[in-house]
Length: 317
Image 1 (cartoon, rainbow, N blue to C red):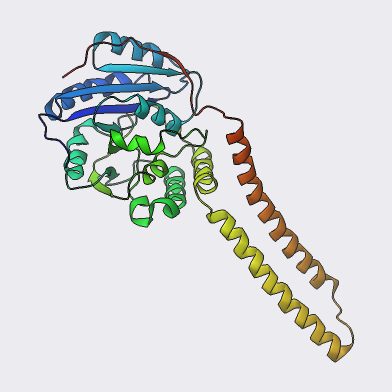
Image 2 (cartoon, rainbow, N blue to C red):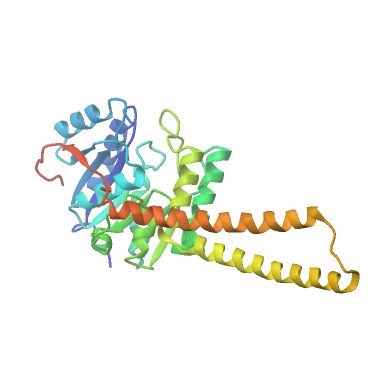
C-alpha cells in the first residue's frame, strides 16, 4: 500500500531537451501541486544535451528553489537514458516521470497516485486523446506494438512518458549498462503489476516535438532487438517457411521432370533464387543487429555521462 499523504515523498523526474521556454512554467505548476500531495518532494531536471539555454534556466530555477535539482549530461543521449539518470538520482519513495513540454499536466499527478494506491506498482497516465500529428501518432503505435512482447498488449496500449513508480523498483535494473534503454521494458524486470488511468493531455506549451517519426521508429526497432528475441524467432519462421516452399518446389520440378522430361522457365528459377536469397539476407540482418548489440555491450559504453550537477540544498516540504 502506498504511503499516506502525510508520509508520502515524491521525486519528479523530467528530461529536458531544448525546453528553455517551458521548464520554468513546469516548475511553477509543480510547486503548486506537490506540497498538497506530499510531505517531501523534489524536482529533478535532466538536461539532455540541449542546444538552447535550458541548462542556464535550470541553474536559475535551482538557485531560487531548494526542491529543484539539475543534472547536466555531456551530450544528447535520448529521453530514456536521461530518465534512467534521473531515476537513479531520485531520493524519495515515489518517482513521477513526465515530459518538459507541459503536455503532461502536473495537476493530474494525484490521479496517478490514487490509482497506485489500488495495488499497482506502475501506473501510466493514458491520454484521453492524442495531441500529436498523424505521423507521430503512427510512430507511437509502432512503439507500443514493439513493447507488446515485453509488457503485454494491455499495458502496451496505455504506455506513455507520464508514469509513477515506487523508487525501489530501480534496484531490479541497478546494474544495467547498455546504451540502449527502454524504461518501460526495464520496469517489467521488477514487476508485472501495471495499471493506467485516463488523464487530460494538453497541447505543447511551445515549439514542436523533438521526437520525430524516424527517431520513434528507431526506438521501436531498438526495443525489439535489444529486449526481445521476437525478430530472431521471426527470422526462424521465415527460414522454415522458405524451406517448406523449397521442398514443394522440388516435388513440383521432380514431377514435371518425370511427366515431361524437362522443366522450362528461367523466370521461375530466378524467382525461386530471389526468394531464398532475400530470406537469407533478412536472417543475416537480424542476426547482425544482435551481434552489434553484443559488440556495444563489450565496449562498456556508458548509458549516460553527467557533465555537472547543481549544488545540493535543503529538502523541500
